[in-house]
Image 1 (cartoon, rainbow, N blue to C red):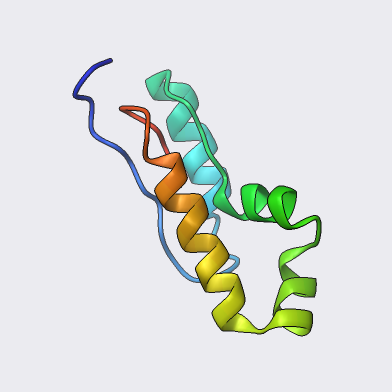
Image 2: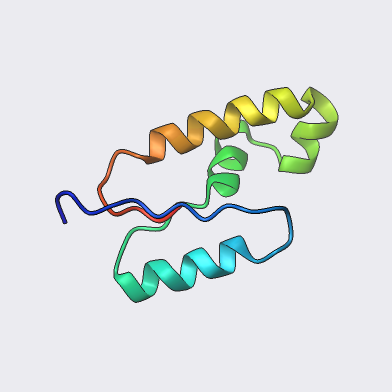
Length: 78
């Protein structure tokens, strides 16, 4: 799939980004990365706990790292 564009689904919390991204990845036959799940896996804590314990700036930095690390394969749906 060389050269295939990335698809990044963005929006406010609770609007269905994960649901839409999963359906889109399946339909397109592309890899799906849920960056919230990746952050939680890497940090060993929930997003809610990160916000409470470390603050939003910490979470946003972790989220940015997860997004950048996920943009390594062509055609990924984030």
